[in-house]
Image 1: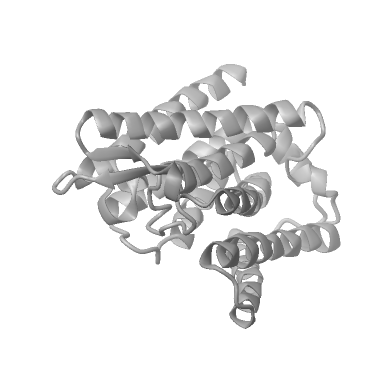
Image 2: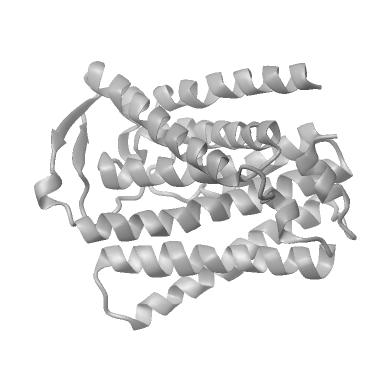
Length: 283
């Protein structure tokens, strides 16, 4: 049995998949309510995003999930994929891979004429870029904690790994269903990212790597290349500006950003297939 699933199998309580799905949404809804604290503080948009939306809001989601795992499932937090063995190496490798694959997507977009890329570092707020990086470190990790660190293994332990992968991927896509610029291709890509993240976590039997990947992907997308993150513009400026070319939405992703492009479809699909083959070979 995969170690990520085996550790979840030790839980005192393994919920029905419907209850697990509702719990995951409950963590998100309750935790996100803490972002309302930002309404009472007058700070620049980038600080509001970094502190209240990304750090406090998503941090609260993680804490709720951790409390549930400790109190109800009666198992340690490390059992959610946070074992100490080579954790820094795994995180760093995932972080680098996230930067590398996103940069590849932008290069393809640029070479095909879907993007015009220009330097904009002079108008970027360096402090904002750092603050938002810190926020994305929490945000990216939180989404992985809920869907790949908790939901995937606990459902896999009660049912099957395939069912756990599919359910966690569909719920992850559902979580982003109300984002600006959402269309059918972004939805497909969100599901594909969920599949990629799930098999990445299962392959490493750890959450460290995919946490690093997710955070790096979001940060480099918004604060380095100046591209919308799942339909949302990141405030505070960016090191580069990537302007989509009109009529090239299939490659640029249009209003949703490059995550809604055929380029990202391939970037998520190909590594997923490779990881699945490696997992089968390992069994």
